[in-house]
Image (cartoon, rainbow, N blue to C red; front, side, top):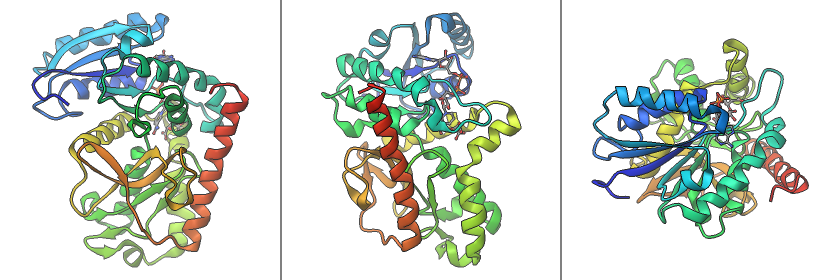
Length: 330
Ligand SMILES: NC(=O)c1ccc[n+]([C@@H]2O[C@H](COP(=O)([O-])OP(=O)(O)OC[C@H]3O[C@@H](n4cnc5c(N)ncnc54)[C@H](O)[C@@H]3O)[C@@H](O)[C@H]2O)c1
Ligand SMILES: O=C(O)C[C@H](O)C(=O)O
């Protein structure tokens, strides 16, 4: 990615909640770093273009030194033309009582055409993060429509789940999130996800030994992380926005700048068949990043409990893929 030339960052759903929490941070340099100018390309549906224009006015009014320009589009082909980083946020959020999978028929149709537009015109180094739900399967749909883009450039956001897990574990163990390493989210960004502490450490000690309470891990930690999205919707009356934008920033920043030595993070990436996850599915794994590429952490021991949880979440991803096929979206 060029350092002195502006990097084109396309954000879909720019006038939405997450868009509003995300764009100012991208423009201030938090996505790609303090030396990288960005040109923002905002994609919205026609009826929300005026609101996106309002956000663009506010971005101008921040006088961000790294913001090289803003273009607003209601056409995906134009919005993704020459794009280096594509943040696919635009999609309907769920409301109270819905599961994220319920959004498949409402949102799935968005990601095929956007994948095709990325295929048609994005820069050769394009990196795609799908935030819009159901994020894993939407990323898979987009990748299916972009045969000329390496599949590993399509990713789905599970960094929010990872960050939620860090916060819950830190609170329980009276440690700080920076003390924790090697935590992992496996599977789908849904209630079936598996937040895994079996390899995690807190200040170098095994996290499970520090916690010393299997029942808390099974009955409190895992469901709290997995159902946090619903708890936020219940409390706020709207789905998470600032924390989701923060996780998107973290995901791309780590993708571009790498993971710290000895640690990893979690991301929804195209499976290479590791850990019994069918090849091609977009599943969350423990991943490292280096040289701008994600790598699934290899050779981890998977105990029986973990195996069962990973398999359950992956089974849901397989079901979603079949539902997409039945809907004719790929
Ligand atoms: N992966 C995660 O961790 C995570 C976290 C939070 C939210 N989400 C998801 O992110 C999505 C956006 O959430 P939000 O709160 O910003 O919703 P929102 O309703 O506030 O905003 C969505 C925006 O997308 C726009 N949009 C719809 N279709 C579009 C299209 N085809 N092209 C471009 N823009 C389009 C809408 O006009 C709207 O402005 C939802 O699907 C939500 O469930 C994912
Ligand atoms: O849970 C949702 O529907 C929104 C988002 O995916 C979240 O995890 O907060």
